[in-house]
Image (cartoon, rainbow, N blue to C red; front, top):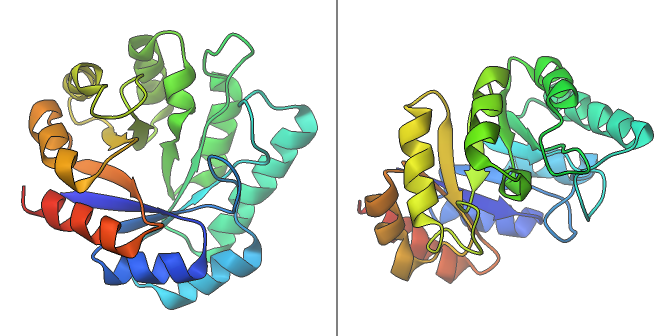
Length: 215
């Protein structure tokens, strides 16, 4: 069982690693997470010995980006790759919420050989099954999703369907309200082998890790 920690500060990243996180999703401060600064990125990479996936997101709000914003995302991928991270995470949609497959494909190609994940922009798409097929065609390695619900616990039926549909071709990473009291239910009823939780409170996060690793 893999537990990924959402972190946006050096101190939180270090605490999450010490609490047993298997991987970090490193973001800069901002609602939903932004691309971290080079200083934060290099500081975390120097301080931890677990894989770090980096958020590539130029601003808060929706996931429909201008050409200039897309250029900033390309720069972010290049920065993360040069720093030696394990993976990058991003999501781009059209105005109707469907995935922007062409631009996503450009970033995937730029990122390789890093692992590539799509964040919860996936939960904004109108049809998760269609989006999953697009993700598989792009070769994306990890899909962070709450199962198109407010929380992963509420999205259990859709998460279970996505796990079955993916059939091991990509990782379905359950995130959104994952806590110690519900993580085992989420794992058991969906079949996910990876979960994502905020690590802002070290004690709360440590309890999630302990419960998840007990499965």
